[in-house]
Image (tube, rainbow, N blue to C red; front, side):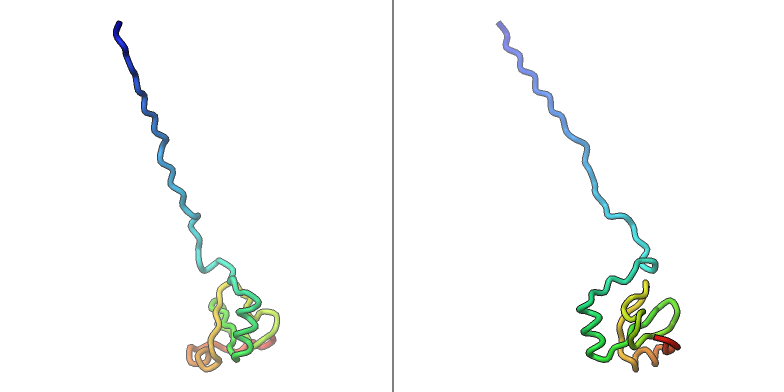
Length: 86
């Protein structure tokens, strides 16, 4: 008698996971309430990088889609203008 052994190797296809591509300019700012409170306490303004307007408080402080905190002097030196209404 002849013993025969057959070994079949099956490999699964490699799977690559990638995060979806994002466009940073259209991504809403993700600023926590703690970050907003800390920035306000340190006297920083919120600059809307799309409109060129900075906010010292009010409804848009830390809320616009494309923005960042900076000092008032930095905002003025960079050419940003104060919001007419906050």
